[in-house]
Image (cartoon, rainbow, N blue to C red; front, side, top):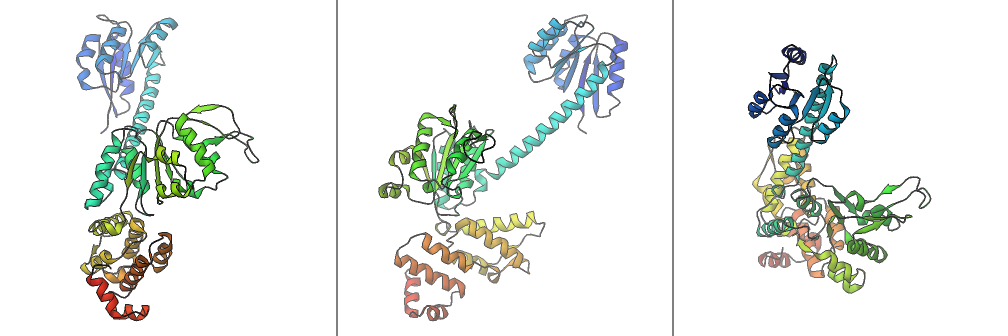
Length: 446
C-alpha cells in the first residue's frame, strides 16, 4: 500500500484529534499527531510527505520547526496553521519556504484534505514522468546499440567521449546505419538529457520552407502565416538540435546556418527580434562532406564549424557477427511487441543472413527479420523465411556510386543469395562463366 504520511503538529489536543480523525477517513492517509515541535523534529526520520504545523507551539515556534526541518529535508512541504489572520506573517512564512498558510477554522480540515489530494496527484505525475524518462533512457542507452564487433566497439569509445562536453558531433554513414539512434543516445546519456531533443530532416523539407522551419516565423511574414511559429532552434534551446542529412542543405541556407552557429542567435522570418539560442549541435549525412566542399556544393567554413567530433558508422556488412546479434534482437523485440512466442534462427538462416550484402543496413535487417517472424510457420526461422527484397537492393546500387567492379560484385552476390548459393544457376542467369564466380569466391571477393 502506498500510504501518504502526514504529521500534524498541534498543541490543542481536541483540534489535533479532529484533524487526525477527518484525514484518516481516507485509509491511504497515515496520520501522526504531535503536541510540540521537539517531538515532530525527533520523528523526521519517518520521512513524512507533508507537515501541518501550528504556528504557536509551547516549546518552539512553528517558524523554527519549519526552518530546522528544511535543513535536512528542503523539499518537504510544510503548511503553517495559525489562529491569527496576519497577512504580513503569512507572506514572511511563504518567503521563508512554507508551502502554504492556513487560518485555523472549521474549513482547515477540508483544505488539508484537498492539499493532500493535490500532492498525491503531483507525486503520481512525477512518478509517471520518471518512468517515461527511464524508458527513454533505456531505449536510447548505448546498450541499445547492439553488437560486439571491433567496428562497433570503436563507436562506443567515441560515444563516451561525446558525453564529456557539448562538442558538436558529426555522424556519417550509409543510409540505415542508425545515425539518429546514435544522436539520441548521445543526448539522452548527456547532462542535457532533461532538455529538449529536436530533430529536423533537412532533405525532407522543401528548400523554400527550410528557413522558417528552422528559425520560425512571425504572423503575417508571408501568405498563410496567420500565427507566429516557433522554429526548431528555439524549441531545442538548452538541449540538442539534430540536423539530419545536412549535406542536402543549399548554399544560401548554409550561410544563414553558419551565422546562427557563430552568433548563437536567430531572427524569425518576418521579424526583427534577436533571440539567443544555446543548443548542442549534432549533424548527420550519408555524403562525404569534404568531397562536397571540393565540388563547391558545401561551404568550407560551415564544414569546419560542424565537423566537431566525427563519428563514422560502419555499414552492417562490415560488422561481422553483429548481423546475427541484431537479427536475434529484432526477432525478440517484434515477438514481444506482438505478444508472440519468440523464435530461434536456424543455422541455415544465420548462414544466409551472414552472406547478404545489406545495402539498406540495420534498417533493412530489421524489416527482413520482422517479415521473417510473420512468414515463419515453425518455432524457428529458416532460410526460406528470409526475403531480402530485390527492388530495395537494386535501388540502392546506384545511390552508393560505386566502381564498376563493386557493382559487378554486388550483382553476383545478389544472384547467389537469390538462388541459395547455386553457382551454376547464378552464372546462367547472368550469362557469365561459372569459373568467374568460383574464382571470386575463392579470393573472398563475394
